[in-house]
Length: 117
Image 1 (cartoon, one colour):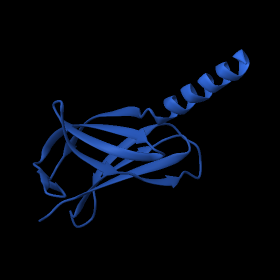
Image 2 (cartoon, helix red, strand yellow; image 1 turned 120 degrees about the vertical axis):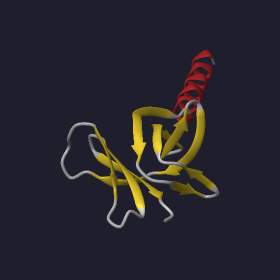
Image 3 (cartoon, helix red, strand yellow; image 1 turned 180 degrees about the horizontal axis):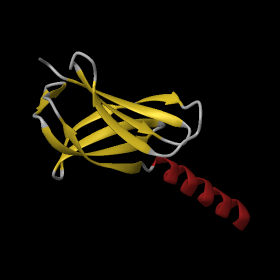
């Protein structure tokens, strides 16, 4: 009976730990233009960006100080060749979007932020 209880406790613990989100700080990134997310507008400037994994999805969280300003769902694409971790931010052609690319060992995670003109 004791083995069954220990096994049940272990299963609950493993399940609970899998629900805890994992964060990767991407550092301070410069948003070169105004960004709109729903009704929120971010002015051009420096923001702290965190990549968070929760419920099998990735989200980009953008902070100003300790204030969470926006959270954007990431798009995951497989990476053909394994490579080092790298973060690239860029303005896309036409200045309609600001993109953050996070290269992980086996995937690339993209965050798109719309810029109203």
